[in-house]
Image 1 (cartoon, rainbow, N blue to C red):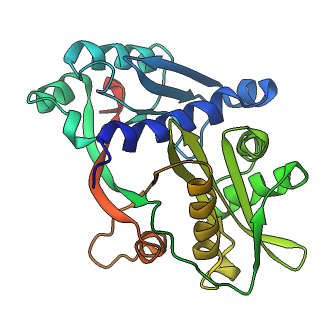
Image 2 (image 1 turned 180 degrees about the vertical axis):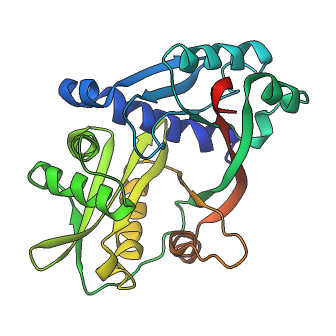
Amino acid sequence: MDISPPEVELAEAEAMFQIQVNAPEHVRSMLGIEVTRIGGATVTFMRDDPTRYWSKVIGLGFEQPVTRELIGRIHDFYASRDASTATLQPAPSVLPPDWADICAAYGITAGSSWVKLVHDLTDVRPAETTLRVGPAGPEHAAQWGSLLMRGFGMPEKGLAEMMAGVVTHPDFHAYGAWDGEDMVAAADFYVYDGVAEGYGAATLPEYRGRGAQSAILATALGDAAAAGCRWFVAETGTETDGEHNPSLHNMLRAGFSMCYERTNWVWRPASDE
């Protein structure tokens, strides 16, 4: 496999940047969204985030090496905004030998892990479902954003409208699965520098196990290949003892390969340590 860590990581970083920077102004104000780049990495902050998901750092170490000084700048960004937490998601290959010392200096601890996966788009497998699968257009945007948040168990206020914006973004491709007139699953991918990033996918609980995500994924893989992408990358949670992650198994069945596990490094201010 000849895809490099920057290709695996930077499409995700840019997707996160675009989702938040293009949110409607009233949503950015409501949620307290700020988006910037530090050392080439995407750095996002959401002041009013009940999920603790949307304040994060992705794409570290490719434009500038990961150093104590760089992490200090990221620390200062979050500390100056009285952030309660943020997640740093560097690829393991960019971590320096003194990473443990840097973490100790800035109150960073290891959290859960995600697995990064990649699909070679020269080999796309079909999938079947009894549901109707196809692109989600502007007329579906509000429903699509709402379903994605509900499927993830996230509150809809502000977040659903933020996510709905990807449906009309020129570099995102959004899909739905319908049971009659009812949208029951949603997913999308983002194209960046010839790589497709599968950013989000969710199915309503009562429709899980009916092949919605496998069929959407097969459609998305074919469309990404037709758009000129060589690789499709995605990420999902690792499985620990006694756990089962359906998303991981859906992707492995679809022909994805695991690249590496990536630790979610959690920053908290000194008062919360």
